[in-house]
Image (cartoon, rainbow, N blue to C red; front, side, top):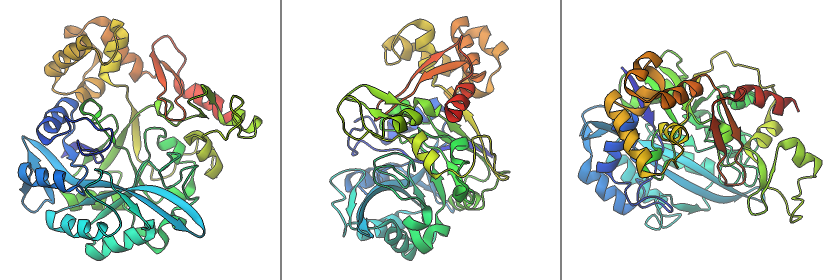
Length: 413
């Protein structure tokens, strides 16, 4: 069966997360968004684990759970902070597991490296990526390990501030057992295809959501049995017949696409950073090197290369943002939310509106300005002022040259 899966979110127990990130609300919003399989998030936190056990009903022999018609998969994100070869590293990793029994063993092991009750995404001191993988697979070979948002500067596998230059450096002899790689909001599959070392891994996209309205902003579309072990197998084998495509942000909209200094208002393309020797002209400190620049450093291919077994992808802009621009309101306004709920109610889910329903059908019940906005996004008729140093990019829909052409120019520059 075909389904949409968001495999990385957070609960109300995570820092900077909405207090509404609770199972009943999560299930309702998953339906609105069109997410069929949702990560539980934060199973390492004792308070959240108690709520997961209270709400989630195991689906026999699937390794998945259900609540109010939505399927859930047990997940957590951990922050590994450690020293290796006289260097300090900070890497976030996603852990997925099929049973409460397994995650209780995982939590017992992780509790030796940090206070699991301090945050939904716990900080684990002195536990390297390789040691984490070793200890997890000793608990159960069923566990999935996915490095999170692998290009983010500060806390990721390849981060410019605290990461590695290869998967082998980070995970050692366990690099071949990594289930998949999460690309993050500031990169998309074509950017990752430039690095041949990543070819053997499935590239997944997830929302990493801290609030309800951002569920599914990135996700994965499968056509296989809704079963934990089947999903694991599909990802490990990079099965293009069952892993159909990923749902993507336009990466320019991500918080770390370009280089820069947020406090100084300095935003640079990689070539501008190089011209300035990596130094901010406003404060004379080192610039935060963004994802585009970091990909350039590790790339051994140009942007046009497509690997033989590449999984497809589609770029979306949220329906709330499309409504907001069509109406001239802020995306967070009550008027936008009201119209969003009305539209989604007519067409089952946001994903259905953005991806499946034809222009001719939409125009029958939705105001023309909004339908035009949906079509313009489908046609990639947008422009983006890129995000940098923790600041999201800003998107403008309509009457603009295709964003992909702009990206080609930037890369060629």
